Length: 330
Image (tube, rainbow, N blue to C red; front, side, top):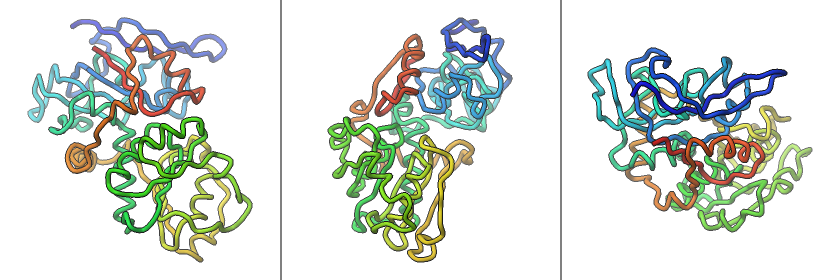
């Protein structure tokens, strides 16, 4: 147990970054309350950015990405956890500037760790991962804002990505009529199988970008892309409806006017799943393990091993991934 395999991102000459699978020493891990042997992780867009040297995600290199991890406690300094406990860690600083789930061992503070929800296996928790947690939080926020399944169609943007696919599956399971917007329109059949009744391409989502208001279409929306597409969604909401923003793959800013807000009373809501208090994360995990549990998760999942990660990262950055990428560490 002295050493383990991990993805190791290093900065070379002229700002180039390289990803290699190397042997690391457990003694080199940072201090923390709990040492965990990682069974599974997942590949998220933030991990891919960390792996190519994005300083907005990771400031210090060399580094091991992986914002998600599920595994078994090996050592614990706190009474709440003991060796053998199966646990889940998502968010906080894991995989950002703290060595993350793309290593076979992590050492973290107890305040980042929850015990595996009883209705999910370790493997299922990582198919969900941060993406599933985010999707659940988005749906919960929409329902708290007043959305019901009888209100009309709910739009999901970035629908072929991790959050998008899980949001579609969850909304469909709860009886909502779902429309899916994706730049990967060639995957329309995949989105239909998830439950989407209407598919929109990126060009359609950009129509009317210069207009202050658009035709009312959506009873609610989950936006994973940001940018001008997000504001077009705002302009297309029913009177009093809400859109939840949780991503920025299409941009971190958009051109806005106050018209949708003062003429239609719509709401732009935000979801953060990284720094969320642990008890709120735990409550959502429990919901995802029980009344909101999703079946057929393998239908949206591709499993890779640690040695496959560099190629998977390149594919994700090239926009060639759909659904979830499960990383098996054992």
